[in-house]
Length: 181
Image 1 (cartoon, one colour):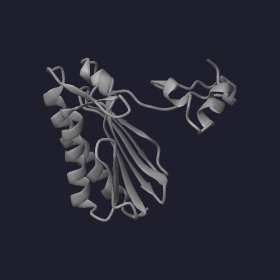
Image 2: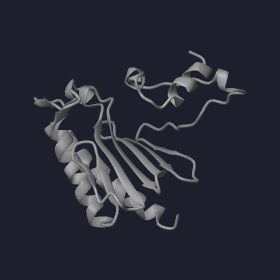
Image 3: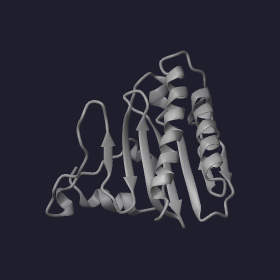
């Protein structure tokens, strides 16, 4: 994809700006409202998504945006930004730095770019189509996978696997049946 590095710069700028907002609210008295699905949402969620949307829309005006707090726009584009401004709002509310800003870019429904940004620890994971994933941290470290001869030796993990129990997508369940516990 010709412009993927440009799109990465746009997405990184968006998470940087959203992180500034989130840090203002972190470990402060933050009111949470309940959404229709009974999950919490805070002013930090809303403001950070608005900031991300503004930057993405300004830099890539013909792309769709699908966000957790404000829904979808321009749904006919081949390119779709997908945003979760605070993935782990419950952790955010309780002052635990185990949440992140998520931004992905899909091209014709296929993921080509993904960022997980933790604005408190200032760590970032970046995935680009056709490239090895990157981990950026002031603490050092690297990411990778553990070598396994077969799937039964691999491990799978998910923050809240119970949310996938009622999903019509059976892939997670099948994967979990084939890996070690």
